[in-house]
Image 1 (spheres, rainbow, N blue to C red):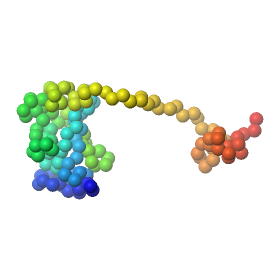
Image 2: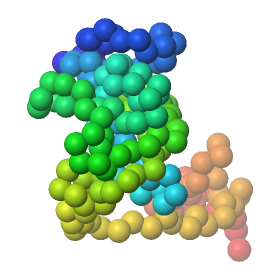
Image 3: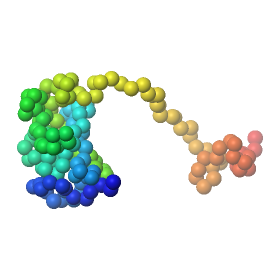
Image 4: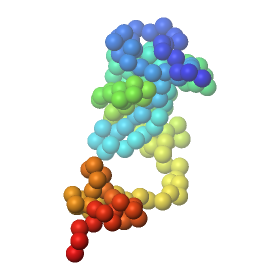
Length: 158
């Protein structure tokens, strides 16, 4: 399905902000909550325009519950409040980052973060150190591989 261009529910969100948002077919976009002092990712919730408006204007994170089909303010029932420190829209306009001061656990399980469920096995990558480029061994500014037949014509004679 194509992402929708506008909100599904009425909102008082500033129209210049609303125009920058890309939403899914339900009018929602992900909101990543990150702890201000540690940078730890706490949780991912869903917002629509009105949830973002409430978050921006109340100083508390408001999300849209996809299961209950209603707004919820983080901490209203658990006491585990998210105090908003800043909000940023990503470069594509399809995700917001909410930097917060979290009181208590961020996860509905009571854990500090929703990402405490365990790491998955993954190959750990490392950046490769690039060798300095030899201008005599390039063509049109691109490196020439040794297996490239043209490499022999560009290899300086000993």
